[in-house]
Picture 1 (spheres, rainbow, N blue to C red):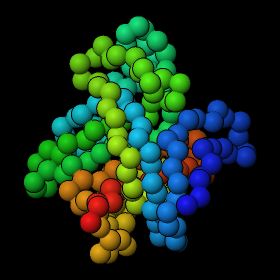
Picture 2: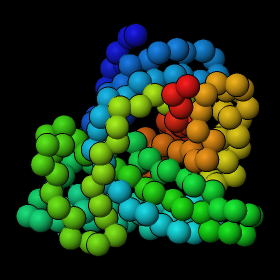
Picture 3: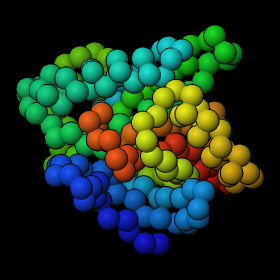
Picture 4: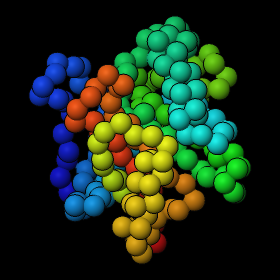
Length: 191
């Protein structure tokens, strides 16, 4: 296993490098990466809805308020990447899905994250886990997220994965126009 550097840089622009969860690459090919992540903490918000973009905007706003100081003791927390969204699809095309939007808690706050004051925001611990990740660039929309998620599921074939939910992971702010990093994830299941 090799350790991937924790960077999010763009040589053509000066921008702050954000903390990201560390991981090691188990397998890499032209279609996807298999990664192992250690235990990590996340601030999360669960939204029921039909449209990913709307759920993401709602969750992002609540989580941004949390890191800006809407917490006890009113402490600012550094922005991190990615903004991860767990999607548990509804039973049918017009049924609500469950979207859990999450911000990674940076290492300096992980042992004692500030307590959210918004009842919709909660702190959760993600266990050590292995995920399959497919990376793509550009500005993504709901259709592209779904298309890339389906593409990854097909590319994984018979690999052991949990198909009851999947994730989107957006690494860049809205003002970054080049070399954008988007990913879709599936969680590997133990056999």
